[in-house]
Length: 401
Image (cartoon, rainbow, N blue to C red):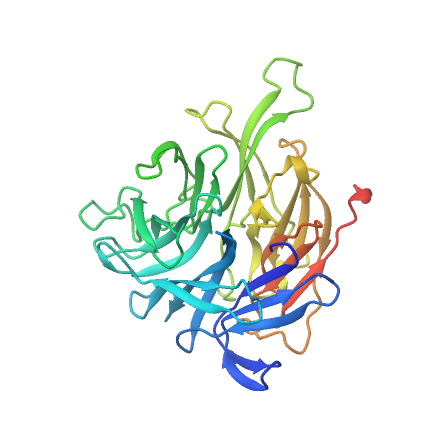
């Protein structure tokens, strides 16, 4: 989300482009949302190849022009074959996107993985999960300087022990980072590793030499590991003795449900509250998860996936957004969770989109699969559905809390 515009990355498939009347492989859509009740499609950027996944669109304004970068994966993120690319387009004229450049390799050779990134507009730095030759299958952090989008420049990499092929393996599958969330103001990068169970916080004061300042793991007991993280700092906690540790720092994170197949049984995914007031001794203090009934038995994926990370393209500030998390919860739609007291998260609202004739079958069930949520400048929530139902624009009445 940025201003009056919504940039949507699509999963593979082929659909009719209403502007041309022709069928096109799914890529990236650009929507005018000046009137959020009537989003208008103004452009579609097809992928380089059929069956590409064009995910994780990021927007930046550089030198008076507007750009997006998207992650393009062919033959799936879990396969080392096929083209993996970070593609940059000039979208200054929204109706006429123009290709600028593509990153398809690092100094080690062609990309073997590409998933999701974070483009800091002010610095031009792009932090992204990619795989490289010399590393086990999966993603780790790499950083490019995109301050001149036509001339990407590789800056740095960071990985967990066990990701390099030259290092001892640490399990059946190497750790894999999903994506970074970057707080450039405070020079911090927050990394979640669903495969491996880890989360890290990096000091990026010197971006060429990222330095770990926190490491925590929920492996192996609690399913896949951290997917999405947000800092929640300098929180005045109720029911603490005034002046006696009642102002505390937290990291909120969730892991990703993967229970689409009827035969799969897994520990429920959830929201975790990690107290990092003493960075050298992180301490879990609370969790929150949705009750099974009536969603767990409905089929498809049920459980947490992601909560809104940005508002109007900037890092989502929980305290400045009424202490609310907007939570994508697959077949349970979007859940709104109040975390003003991090020791007592509570749900204060939800929206489950209706199944339509466009909703696809998910492992034998036609159910909503709310995958991601983002917030626009007005505070409206935009929900993407990975089962083909579409994009939903939702307003939450804050006066009800």
